[in-house]
Image (cartoon, rainbow, N blue to C red):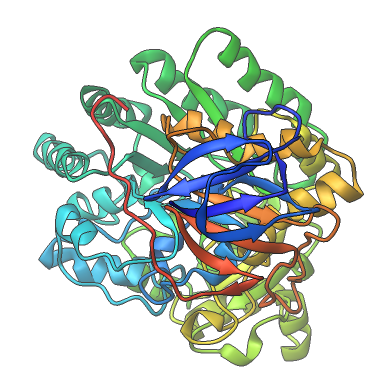
Length: 531
């Protein structure tokens, strides 16, 4: 007798094929049969009449490694139908943490992981100690973290000994099961690395059959050059490259989405192993300090905070922003498009824009920004509306652009419910299948599901997840296509998506009738040889 039978639904299998009526039989964690009107007996039958039965969604770019130890149930993700998260992105990972650099890593990651405890650990120890969760997890090791462990926050090339240490730490992480390396070349200390440093690490990845994902060096005025730098890694080494959260930031760059997509598509046609992902929002989130010119953070957080207290430094920052716009985000209309998401030491300011705060204090906006960052000890996280909706739609409708929320797994109560974070934590996949498919018609439903299931699995080198097929792991999402929707907003972000009735992870029901069962059947997926 099978464990579970999902009966009567419209099966959309993740391959991009149209839906069909079929029942799904599940036993010992895997799909054992897909057939019309199944006769196989099962201990439990779920009626999916009038709903879509799809593979569990793959969130290919997330930062939930910073919250899953605090929120093992992964509510904001699992309630959207997400069953697999790829973490350790943008060059940021919580390991390895060498004993003499752990405090620096904790300080560096405070805007992203304000409540996460940090302990000295190797990458192997970190993965081994990661708690059971409701979702499957793929880990990456972050280049920024590796550079912190070797060269700290110093703006210089690494010595040969430091480079050897970084390569050794990468080797150890890959041996422990890390899927690959991520980079965050837009901010310190990742931005201090030249292309030759990344290529040296990519050669380590190639030896292991591992992958490389990159928050590229610039997403604003020099985004084309930054995309080409990422593509060059694939061209030089043959390593699979994932370009993270593709966007055009800054008003001077709006309207360029088609050209950017064409450049990546051309690389794919040349046979290069290059993919990209995006989220369907015109607003990004980042530590506030990352909006400043890169020289501001040289030497680390304490040095930055001391530097920001000087009038001549603020004059220089003001001049740089006037000439070049914000680091990585380009030119914005005003500080009214930048709002506080989380401020650990000024929590009452969450939701307010920096323009509003400046007017309330009757000070120059740049002075207000600097004063705020000093008062919040450099830990402020912000939301910034820096993209055009037209570009977002153009990127979203491309059937080969994968889906990554760039967000944490959160919950509406507990430690991860603080502040006013980006609503994409609660809404990315529901927004794709609701607003983008049903309301805007950017994609067909099978095409949208393929982006976040079968296509994502192929990019990751997974052949037994991401599709509904005999023998595959039973990660399944059942949802109402007429009802699925995101409800989280910028003013009220802590709201779960609606429309998902059942989520199965490794054959175990985690969402049942729209409610979380408390089950934690997720697994850490370690990189097999050659992937």
